[in-house]
Image (tube, rainbow, N blue to C red; front, side):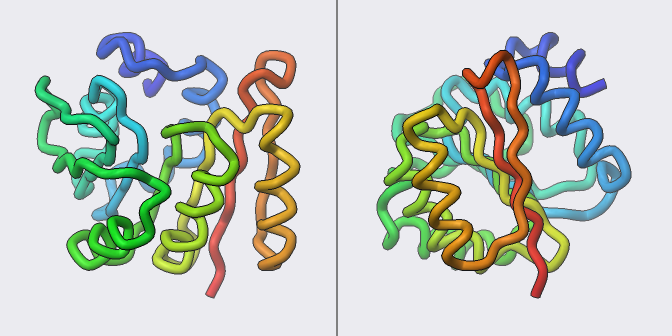
Length: 170
């Protein structure tokens, strides 16, 4: 279903991501949860999430203003590497069940977001980093190891679009 929604809304998601997301989220898709996606580009993925998670509160962050339709999602403009901005997001959004980082794809930015947002993901929640590229994967993994995070790396499309899924436990 999620692959079809990504296609329907022309969301820029690698097809393997849709398959992984379906496996991860199918059992919770009707729950009352909070999802935050960092880096929503044109906002099309937010439309897919709106359809897929009918009972969720949905938030998106992007560094540029989004003017198109994003369904019932709330969009916040800011930089994922700005810790003050991210703390403001937490104050407005509260604890999250799912965070998806599809923003700059730069390791320093991914780690900056992790440091601020991961502690605010609910027990048994998900923090997902899309597009871990060869150069950045090691830095992100080193950080996750340093905080003893529970994570799994998925390779898609010959290592070009790796995904890291962190499962929270408190």
